[in-house]
Image (tube, rainbow, N blue to C red):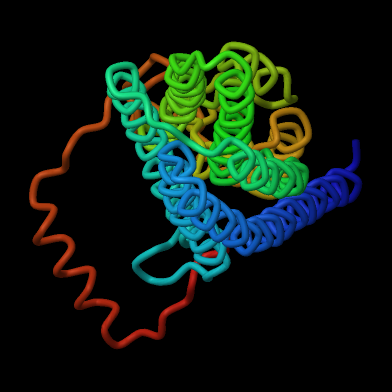
Length: 347
């Protein structure tokens, strides 16, 4: 493939990834904003219904909806923060704000599940008399509005914060359905234990989904390899590029959900820089097209340079702390005092 064709392919892939990420990001923000305001309607309906019917279940669910408002507001805030450009201190921008928000949301969901389970235990011992018809009306409003919110959030399900919000919404729907079912059973049979039994089931579903979300969030914070990428296959594909001899000091991680990055050392043939640029374009084009990695940092080495600068033969290099870091940092900051700042490229 000619140099011009490789460069053109690289630009097209980069453009597609940027457009896709921006489109998904925009849909996620719109969905979360709409969900936030619709959830206010649910809160008002359940508070009113709970007070009128003397239903502890509805009032407890209204408290659950308050946490949903917090979660949705936090997720919305995180999405907005990711739009901020990178700067001298945050060279990757603010994408990790969304991951921190997802971590808080997942933790909140687990706490909610524990609270629901605790309340269920209390209700086994002390069942509360309620007015079922008012319960049905308030719970029905919650089900309808939450279904609308859920369909809207499905459009941005690739975003961790949207998924966390969707889990909150599904938990609300389950809780509202449980209120209706429990009300019907109590109305027809007077069997009150149905209410706490259904609550325990809802708590288990919420906890299971939250645990999965928490694990994925922790993987991103620990900069683990994305679950849909096989490093062995990725290295084999890189070695197949003409001019590439080997790969080492490889790192692949997620900056945020769906935004992948890679850094590595690549051993190539002894070539002048003008020729090695073709290898770089081929590598970045392949990594973007096949693995959806949009941010790459690739350092080329030849046999001569490798003997001097890198003595590690394995695929993964152990990271070491460099002594005198503070002194080097002070010198570096002093050196840049007289120079204008040039921001890094946003990923």
